[in-house]
Length: 263
Image (cartoon, rainbow, N blue to C red):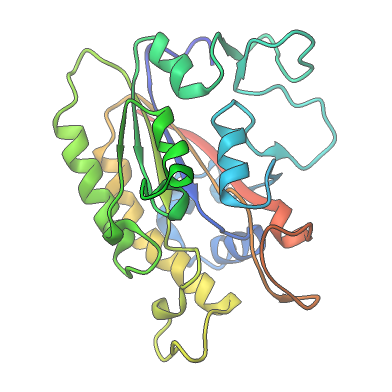
């Protein structure tokens, strides 16, 4: 990371609530061709999230604690706040002197932008403003939120407006929190109804929707750009009787992760 920061833009895409098992199954079946084209080896990496719901996970991500590889460590981090005794800060870790990654990158000359999706980014309440406030520029509208079936398209339109204003000589760090995977997602599966509700199948259909449009997001990014794309947590659909997240179940704690360069 020390060789990249300062010379590359950085895009962090959080596919809010995406389950690892669903992501891996769709990749293997060829149902997410855009994502698998970009992922190393065409596969998601299996990792563990630091938080079981959006706020906790993003607070950790933005302090430098991205999802941890599921195998035995040690696992040096890409980014880390300077902290005495950190065992996950390695020689290749980019270390910043700030409490959060946007502030650290801001000190390094980056413009920091957040394009929100789920309610923790809506800026309608003090809590919904906490994560966006970490960025120099932040955006959210109801059309980018969980209830709009075209949420990702609307977010990409906002990204396009942001990118049109970026000076060529200033590096960019952008977070895009994709809301489409989150409940409600029943409207992405033909024949599903509001009364029938969400399911693992409609969750998969939401990922197929994301795959149809996310290539537009990548196309908007300036080159070179480091892309980090992952879920913040999974969610249960009657797994062992559980529904939802903010619980300690395997489908919540295990998330898909990928990183690649756009050149």
